[in-house]
Image (cartoon, rainbow, N blue to C red; front, side, top):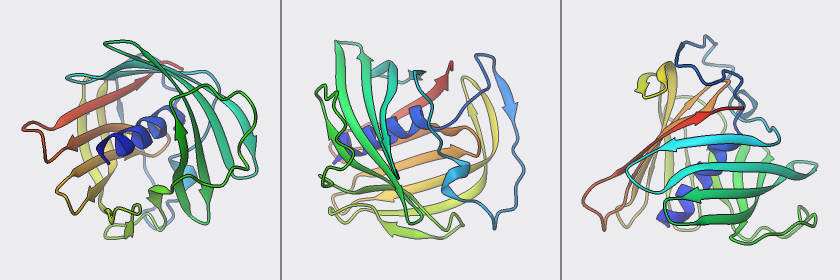
Length: 208
């Protein structure tokens, strides 16, 4: 469950749109809280390069959009960890006000499989994007809820304002907190595994 959520959030972070380069910045988007939608946080670019800072795990990733068909996007991901690179194929879907992870395998799949029957459905975001909205995350009875849309978050890459915070709880005690910025995507997430003493905190930076 923990690995699945990390995978979904990680891919979300590398597909969210960013055009701010490598400099630190104070990012303060302004928007009408009643008009937010999935497209404000999610868009897709080819050959995105991402760096993550954390206490262990992913160093960076290169991701390529290999196929787009209707509302589905297929990705090839090369994820560099502290141990060895991982190759993965993933499909995400934007449909009916939801952004979801529907397929993921740690293998290279070059052909177009966007029409595949969903292997799973892990809902990362769901409209309406307003405080208090909650949804069933997946078949493991996870519950996600939008806690705030006006957080101020400091990261090693800058300070962000008007940040949307999403909290996810699972019956086994796992907890996830994800922080999104309009026009930028995922900037930080915290993973608390009930089997571990310390939570994992990761910060995301894009180069292109």
